[in-house]
Amino acid sequence: MSFYFSIFVLVIFLFIPTLLTIIFGFLTYRNVKQSIGLINQHADRQLTLMICVQIILIIWSTIPYGIFMSFSLLTNKTIKDQDRLNKELFVYTIVSLNAYVHTDVCIIYIIYHFIYLLSIFVGKFLCFHDFIKSFS
Image 1 (cartoon, rainbow, N blue to C red):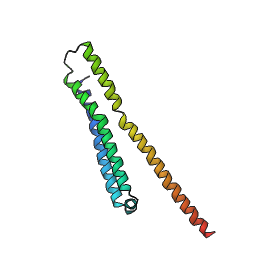
Image 2: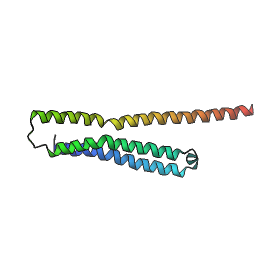
Image 3: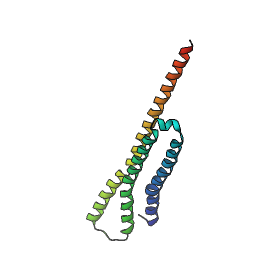
Image 4: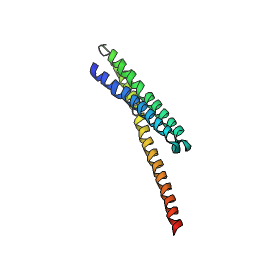
């Protein structure tokens, strides 16, 4: 692997997802804190927990990949025997599979969020239906 590819992978897979999650999580948390209705529903606590879990999983799944890429970058010019190459390939496979954990967490979060919004919509629809029914 080339030097620039390793740096590119470190930036794309390690720094950008973590940084974006922290920034948008903070902005979302600040927005929820300003909404009194959401504070009464304890949405700020739920949001804080979801964001913290997501940040932990992103860091947990990308740091080993970043460490391996740094190791690979540092030992790129080293002459390696077949046994060492096989061990590094095995570690690379495990670390690469681990790097996709945060993607699964994001998909689960999106599904959870959709179900939550659907329940709010259905609840408001039922309340509106009862309101209309009271006039008839």
